[in-house]
Length: 312
Image (cartoon, rainbow, N blue to C red; front, side):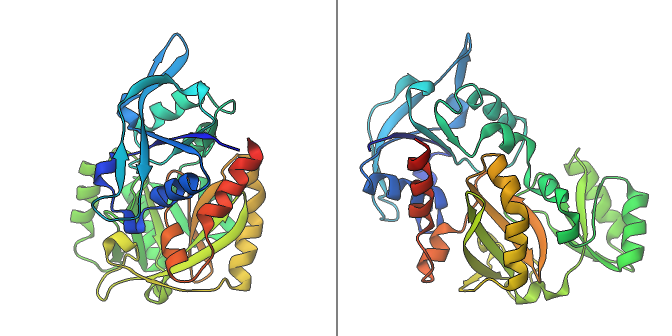
């Protein structure tokens, strides 16, 4: 089987390939003999219902700074392709949402991974609230009085933007924090959306586990340990990747959410778990695949392409 696979992504020239999950998927597709193309989301067009993009053929190699060779762009009807991988990074803003509306026109004739309708309707910090019994206490609001009451109840809380990513603009604050008013004003000026407010889990110092699920099944995990003096475990924020196994509680979390992921066509998902509490379900461009393999875990790119090929 030879598939035509296009990757909707940020400019390939800017990739840091050592930790990039999208690049791992490209390497796997190429190794299987599939034909690779790339394009950036700003080049998508839709005319009279036909969705096109100027795609360019690429070959890739696992060499930082010399990781691809590209051919000439040709504007192409994306419905003529077999697969489109939706891999541009958040923020999950209206530009991102607009691409899901267009890609929805070609799916499932062209298999879009993940399903664009459900990517649009399952943003990571909202979708997770379908499973409150698995989460720490969580409030979504921009109302200052509600946040203050929540902080009074739990003492230490974490605030983060509803559509943020990569650990950016995540803060911890406490009941007696004199900076809370300034922090609230900063958030109010930066973001029009509500914020996510969660009870602080002190065990974050032991790690924030990223678990990858493929077609709703737990497939591999990496434990991300925050740098000293930092709350955030994201590897782009200095978190250290450590090998890990899944606990009974973590397997139960995966089993609980797996059917919902399969129903929605969310084939590649990364969840975040801290001390047995589910904090996010990442469906836009989940990362962790390369770190898991580098630490001796399974080849999740191969597992995902097994599923993709089965659906084609």
